[in-house]
Image 1 (cartoon, rainbow, N blue to C red):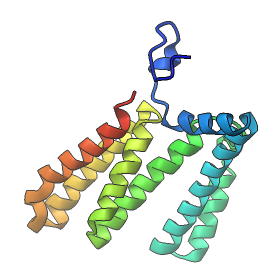
Image 2 (spheres, one colour; image 1 turned 180 degrees about the vertical axis):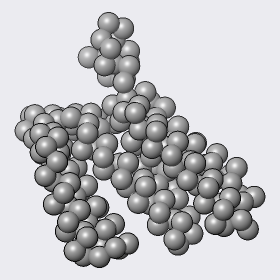
Image 3 (cartoon, rainbow, N blue to C red; image 1 turned 60 degrees about the vertical axis):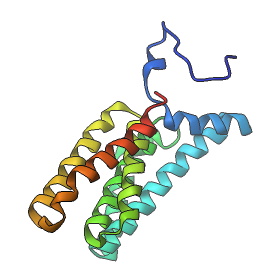
Length: 174
């Protein structure tokens, strides 16, 4: 009705971040709530694939298989996979943020750092509780540079500011 994002003063949920809900809105615009539910299910599938790729890359194929079996048999994962809730998307964004930062630590390719920052911003822009993930990643970046890559320690403020700016941009609509 207003054609913009605006506050609804008497509805508490209007104060929450809604990045994932915007994806569901696309599903509603395309057809109906079944498309939105399929988008949520797809986020869960992407999370499973990302978990397998991570486990295979850093451990083994059998560890990857075990990790996806364990993840998919968690009751809450099964419960929310058929609904339009934020949990599967949030899990995906947080996991991809951590995965990207681990790749950045191993390769020192700047693109991984930027990608990890984007996924962290998407996560916080989906649910405020993801701030703990973003704070954890900031601390991890600091620890990595302080203890394991001292020659780049002088770049720490720039990394933290860049990380914070990217996260803030993706959180700022809310």
